[in-house]
Length: 269
Image 1: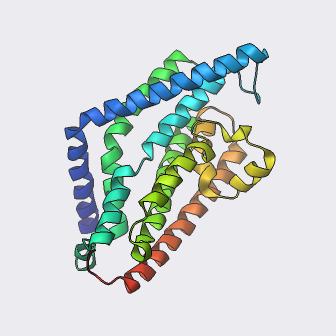
Image 2: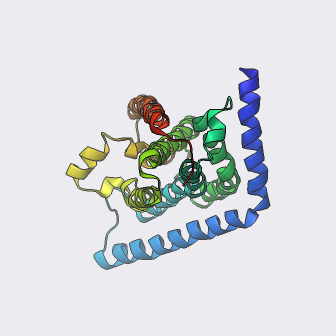
């Protein structure tokens, strides 16, 4: 067990070092977040002013901006453009062979790469997040427990996101190239996960469907905890459902991967 932990920690450390070599990526990510927030600020300020709203769906203007800001950050933390591309290429070109003949889990190896590649963003965005706590006092992390549950649900969110990516990537065993599927998913999740528009604004029929999927736990659930919108009972129920989805997607991903390996012809294209 110690050897396994050391092995995957080495992968994490290697990708952490690589991420530090490309510090400009973090700067670009910060610019992307701030520019997205600026656009949202302009749009919603115009809506509030022209319509004369004081609240929208029980959100004041400041509360809505804070909610959207945190949603954008969490959405960025789960980005998998780099690691998913590497995994698809490995299956398509036959490089996955080296994982089949060595005592390395393809799932956990790339999960550590996923975490390591995004690790610099975690640090930078954490500083930005706590800066917002002082800019908008009383709107984020009003209690220690809310911060604690937020960290737990954030980890579950990242793991769920990776599981979904892994399942999509495994279809490369049959279709060869599935980048378009990953791109379509990324674009769809910008809206459906609540990254730019809170899912609370969606029609009830769509919201009812989302609540029965893992999509709710990718962005909306941790943000709702951080902003104090959920009761203790709702948090506990949500945690149980998020853990259940983690188990379901882990088992499903493992099953699809094993089926793919059986059909895999072990040579590149």
